[in-house]
Image 1 (cartoon, rainbow, N blue to C red):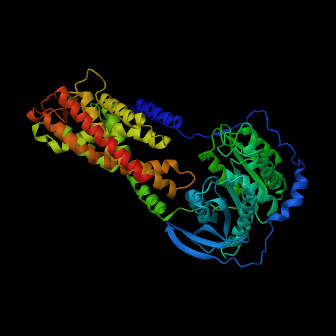
Image 2 (image 1 turned 180 degrees about the vertical axis):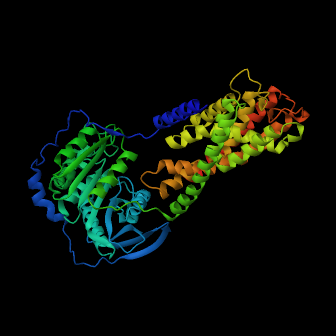
Image 3 (image 1 turned 90 degrees about the horizontal axis):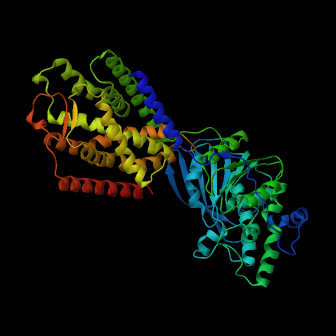
Length: 582
């Protein structure tokens, strides 16, 4: 039994790992750069930098004029909405994420992409705040209330004015961080994504207070993005007249980030790009990376334009190495969950060890049934052990009709066995974070049916404890309603755990979700098992001649109707839970 159990557990683990993280590290792509600079532009980046860097100066002594709009607390972090005065006119909408504590804390500027706004970065910012950093996010000029409904790019001189204003406003965001007593001015950094990754290269050339810049999926700037033949951006300027294109290039080329990113030293640069990015093709990224000054590091991932989990982990490690982040601070919900999981895990381990000790001395129970009980204890912890002792062990020791189990007890045992099989698949789905409809509906059915078959092994041995008169119908009905409980929690709980456990902790999150989902699965699966045991579709327990356990079949039409009804309930619950989580 032990060898078979080890092989089964290893098989599940290998399958789970195979369904796991995407976006792993990759080698630099071997591509040819076919981009040609627009005709007539100045190719001397150093001269362009020297002649235009003063465009981004401002009066550093001017008051910030911070106006706070509201505060929302999440765990140990306060998210403060505010505005501050822009030296270029108007006010800058910003959100400051401040973790509890007197400091000293790191300071981090986090910049969004295009088209987007600061709210898209909120979860990312919250995660950084839990690493002992005060984080500020701002809206780019095109995303501010006065420009609502307008396209991010106008292909006029306004694009130049707004790009200059953005860099000045980002420098003022650094002033906001420095003004806070808990922020250590020697431990500050910048993280920009997409458009933010490009603008970070420009900021790095004119700002010397930050220790490091993380430039994620960025390219050399808007001119590169709009003129490169390999790009597939919707922001092409091909609709402009010849004179319009010439005027736009004349305005934008001198402030293209690729001319400035080579002057970031002594700040360190981290470039992160995807090998299959269709918005920032590898050739554009390579050109931008090559222009960056030393010290720098370049990381590629098997990913598109999104930031993969591996890239996020690398970002954290890089910032920690450069003193711009601390160690992960568990949120208040996470601390309570950790305590509960510690107690539950200890009870589960103790229950499992006791069960294995009892099973080792058992010379009559088939190994298949032993494995199902092991799964039940793994998923239901001490509840699974109590069920085993009451529903299985005690009647076998007592023997005879007097040891018969009531129908309600039989239904509990039947539900636990079936749910344990289904939850193997739910574990894999949660760990892989893949919620394809076919996967979430069919894989639990397959593992549940496998658990039923295992419980009856070895074949040929008299084992009257579990019999289904219509195995496939029983498994479909059971799986559908069991999954209602598991899936009503899964999307919502995983979303919350991503907030409470940023940058990793997937196994802990999955384990906690499964603890809750397992109990919910038994609660929603019990009524159908109670009905099936009472009707005789499921016989679970010792064979005492109870007439209630006589097997009776369902007609095809009734079986099909029940299957469709329970499936409809499952689909509705999954869609509702997913919508709620979103």
